[in-house]
Amino acid sequence: DTEVTQTPKHLVMGMTNKKSLKCEQHMGHRAMYWYKQKAKKPPELMFVYSYEKLSINESVPSRFSPECPNSSLLNLHLHALQPEDSALYLCASSQARPLKPIYFGEGSWLTVV
Amino acid sequence: AQKITQTQPGMFVQEKEAVTLDCTYDTSDQSYGLFWYKQPSSGEMIFLIYQGSYDEQNATEGRYSLNFQKARKSANLVISASQLGDSAMYFCAMRPNAGGGADGLTFGKGTHLIIQP
Image 1 (cartoon, one colour):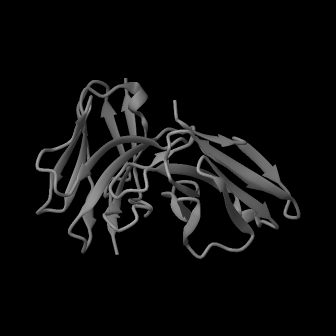
Image 2 (image 1 turned 45 degrees about the horizontal axis):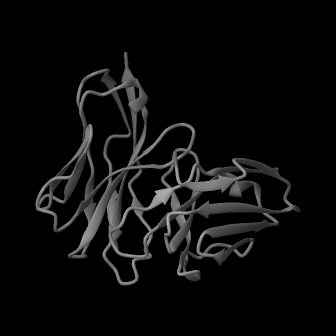
């Protein structure tokens, strides 16, 4: 079983809705990540938090807003999404040290209608 | 910049046979990490095995081993005695040895492995 927990597992939202994806880990990791994965494609990095500070933003549209309230939690706030944003959103965590494995959650399947 | 190439989009293998999934990489970094992940249809990305660029021995984890050939820039995954539950998408990935340790993974396009009874 994964030690990175994501909720909800499935989310359907309209283009005018505001929703959030949540992620929690209790492995003491100080780096946390959001990835987006479209069907039959590899994951694409969206955001990286290191010691609760945003360290990487891969030119993600502002309709995606990350938040790291503490060292265990990571949120992704969604607003005014487009149908093309429908994808699997994967949260991950790792030790904030080079060359350590990154551990993923089970993902949140998002459908924008 | 880093690049991962997986040349096998799909593979069919008979149960109990050994499987080799190919991965080549390109990087200008001297120090880096190579990783393999398994992704079943449920979506979870499962970490399988890791190889550091300075590790002299090939990594092994149970039925998984990593055939690391640094001069050829290849990091192939070998699964021994394949099982039906091994059917999944497999991704090769790389991570740089950069300061701060908060760099993400660069993934290959993946190989869809199907184990047949």
